[in-house]
Length: 371
Image (cartoon, rainbow, N blue to C red; front, top):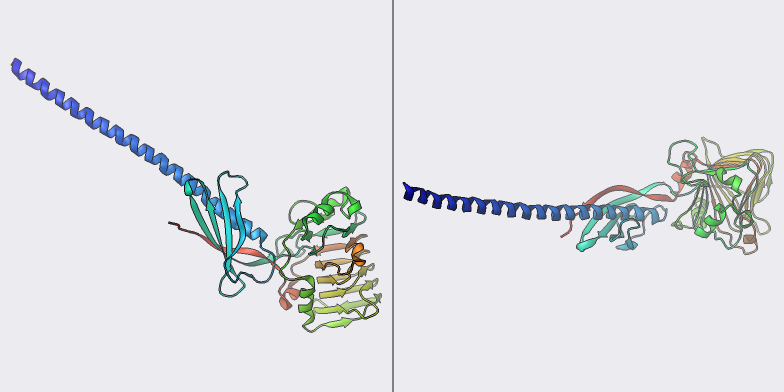
């Protein structure tokens, strides 16, 4: 019996050693898999962040692509260089663009890079969306002189859509950030809004609603020339008083106040209503009850003064003055009880005749798997 018990002790020791070995193996495996889980979780987290950074690149590109009617990317073009993410350290993105078949759509490729060679790629298809103009637009105007003047507290420049069919646009858009700063710095000596006038310019963004955009795909003069290549009514430079209609809601038209060798521009002092497109070469002064529904384009040696009970419902587009003496004055002077308000419905005829500049718009996107 004693020898038998001794034999069982040997077997018991072997079993104990075997069980301990199994437990150690399981414990080691558990620790190994736990470490792998941590690595997988870390890689997944970094990859998710990189994906979000790539999407940020698409949004950045949409913001910097100029408003226009088509896209100019005949070959792969860098639209956003390698840019560190402003809020996530260690990550950056870059974006290229190329047209699809035709010029009305383009493909954006945003590549995000992060720690440990992490790379994520997002491909987006874009087209043209809402209007790329403000209620008032001064593309090309710079801050070298006082380009704007605002008087009183009864006027308004409103980028909220008057017919509630489109998203709001800025009240005023410019292409020179220094000019935007002058308009919004509450200093009137450089042509800016006074502190008690900032709430009179409304629309997309903060109040005052003034935004800096990329230069348009075409100059103001080129846009005007496209309209003038169509059927239009020509009027001489003059002081227009009395009552008149320059187009109606049922029959909008393109009206051109055509300059002569002696004169240019117009003064509107009467009760005139218009629909469609109005193009003025030279100074435009509105002092009467002028109401226009559509697109007003002022170009050439231009100074636009909107006064009295004038109302422009659509968009006012002002080209940079080509004359140094004329440019010494204001290009936009708003005073009195004048109102300039964005109206997408009133712009419909103008947009049907000649496609107006529009912002880039996201159509679809997907992640591109990388090796």
